[in-house]
Length: 326
Image (cartoon, rainbow, N blue to C red):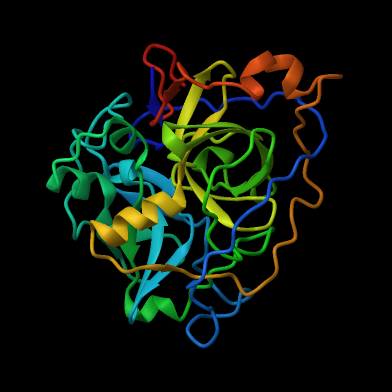
């Protein structure tokens, strides 16, 4: 079963507890992507900004978390997951079939004085083009909210705590590679120390369109859309699903480069990722998940699933497991 990580209005949700998994690091190489936009001259300083990666977004569908800033000409967008404006239920995960709120839908952006506007949805675009590819329909989960011009001056592209992004990663992510993310679910009751998280990639699926990750603490309802960075600070993913097996609390992360390419090629968006104006500093002070075979690392807990095939993963996009209240 697949669930999405939206905090739905009018529903009581229980937060998942993080497992006390331990330690060890692994890194993966990354490719630099030319064409990333600079933050200079357009945005507020990091210290003065009220809008940044990780702020919450509210729509009629519920509450989600933003990922990164993007520009196209004189327009500025903040990224989110497409399912965050979906009209379906917890298990409606096929973006080529699931209903969505239309383009132009107003989105409340935490820290903004004005409402944003839904400018792009991968789900709407895939349906417009009649897409049928299973991997594309399942894992292309990306949307853009256009900032009002008056709010751009209050925005900054730097990821809180970590710094970056320093570019857009292309190519797969090795099993065991360290990952970093900043979630902002209301389930954390505004406790900012719980927002930055570090973890590892368990493996890629869908011909590289999704990465299965586990972090301390895990992504929970309301974290949907959160951005993910690799060990070099390059943006590589958007939190999409909450998985139930083989490791409860692991998450599916849509590949950002592929999502951006689709938005540009099929959605005519012509967007660029905006780099942060502070260097990436990694997960200083955060607990680290490891994949070693000794001690309570992922290698012991998951066996071959930490390094092998990830087929048959059971997951959810709304973080609501029917009958359990999760």
